[in-house]
Amino acid sequence: MGNTDIIERIKAAKEKLGKDLIILAHYYQHHDIINFADFVGDSLQLAQIASRQKTARYIVFCAVSFMAETARILCSPEQEVFHPEPHARCPLAEMANISDVEKAWAVIQGAGKEVVPVVYVNSNADLKAFCGRNKGLACTSSNAKKIMEHILSENKVPFFFPDENLGRNTAQTMGIHESEMFLWDPYAGDADRNTESMKDAQIYLWRGFCIVHTIFLPSDVERVRKEYDNIKVVVHPECIPGVVNMADFAGSTSFIKNVVEQSDTGSKWAIGTEINFVNSIKAQNPDKLVIPLKTSGCREMAKVTPEKLLHVLENLVEGKTPYPVLVDESFVNHARIALKRMLEIA
Image 1 (spheres, one colour):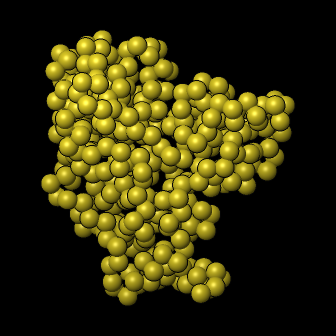
Image 2: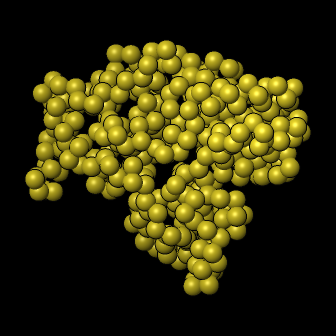
Image 3: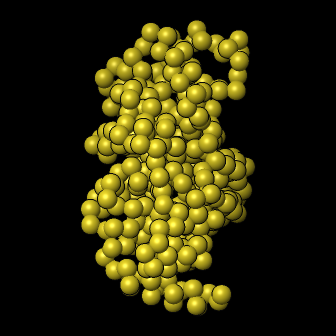
């Protein structure tokens, strides 16, 4: 099947489905997918968009599985959500499972502090439901600091999982010292944990990481500064603290997009995030020099292809429902609570 044929068939299917269809795509998708999306955004933006969709019968989510799950949780029961590639799963989201989180929760609560669980949206539905049940909430990289500040302002302590780097970098921007951060390693034995240090913690973190963003190193920042005079470095806060501390700016996907777009003509930027998104920013800012800090792509996002999108759309035209996103009913209500608490604060 030729690329031109696929494009024309996708256009035809979209036209037939009309207002019954909404296609959402994350910024990390290839431009071949972005071109067909009705809405493109980061995790927070897409969660907000999904929560506002009231009329479309079909929502097709081009991203990784946890994002499609989030849309399923936030959308109306009569709407249907589809994911072109159900096997596109976020490795970070798989770094925390409910049994390990519940074990950590039981121990952390024994430290004598009032703790609020905060789950990064890069997580599965059962963990969002855990937070909803335990007076907690979800967050994205866009609003992590705002949510942490809200919790601390109530003299409570956040238990943030599963991304250690986002939690650590956010805590640093709030003036929390390394000695006040407690890292829960789910792979460590009880004897290997200094649980006494929990009592002084201002934030509890989880040992998890994003493969795409931990590939960036301080040496990469040093290299681009040597190669390009006056270049600015902007990175995602899922990068390791050593990279974030050396960068000129660190922020969410939408932050990165905005800071480059709003910069002066002729400015130079090295961006530390997913390569499809870097290429998109480069194309949209031809008056600036935009380069990747290093090439790093998300293999899971790349599993969503035009062929797979076409398969979903043509099946919908025929009245079939391929790859529906289903979330265990026992998780839906509490997961929705965690997400709505996030959206209220955001």
